[in-house]
Amino acid sequence: MGLLKLTDKYSEDLLEAACKKALSYTSSPSYKSIKNILVTGSVKAEPESSGSKTTHKAYGITRGADYYQR
Image (cartoon, rainbow, N blue to C red):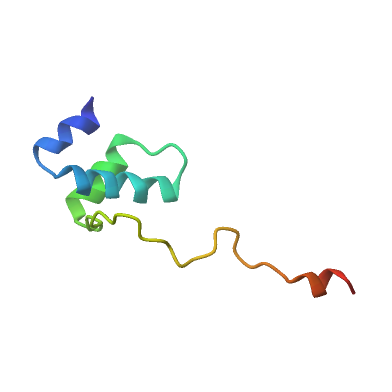
């Protein structure tokens, strides 16, 4: 409930971005860490993108089939 209360002061987009950033640091972020991210302004709200695709690969570096046939 505390996180939802933060939407009184910050936009839902900023709160969502702060939560994503906190989750990138740890799998169980605390209320305090999310609030700190919002207070310091170290996160920007991501604009809603309808159907845009990411350009990064989900699995990192992958080797081609010729690598494994050696």
